[in-house]
Image 1 (spheres, rainbow, N blue to C red):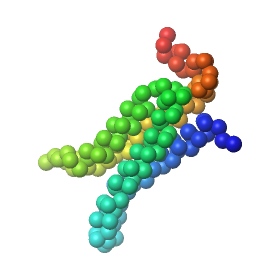
Image 2: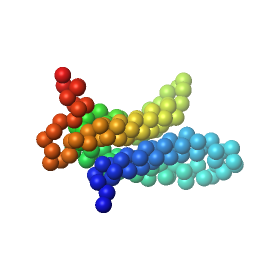
Image 3: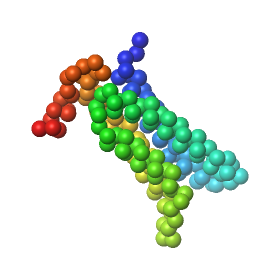
Image 4: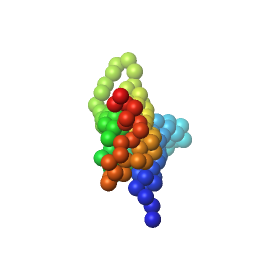
Length: 146
């Protein structure tokens, strides 16, 4: 039977993979489809974006919220992830006359989401002592409070 630590670790790794795939889809997808002469598939590709976003959000909630509540209590992981989702949601609505904001916002959003999962993994591994029924405080938390 798997323990909670390995389940959380798997969810974080899946979240990182999903954000990476989303990044590749959003950045490389249009370039590859256009250069391959498949511009008619760009519309199909754009219709997949909500699925990537919903999948990333679902995996993020599954991985980050339980780890926050039961392990490390670090809000920075959730804040990073929420910022990444916000970047991806707003990237079509921000306009600039000088540069294209969409690739920058996509890269930033995916990077924030990957960073949130990586930090969540790191904090969860450090706080193995912080099981739900344990009164012990993680070493990492003791150092930051002094």
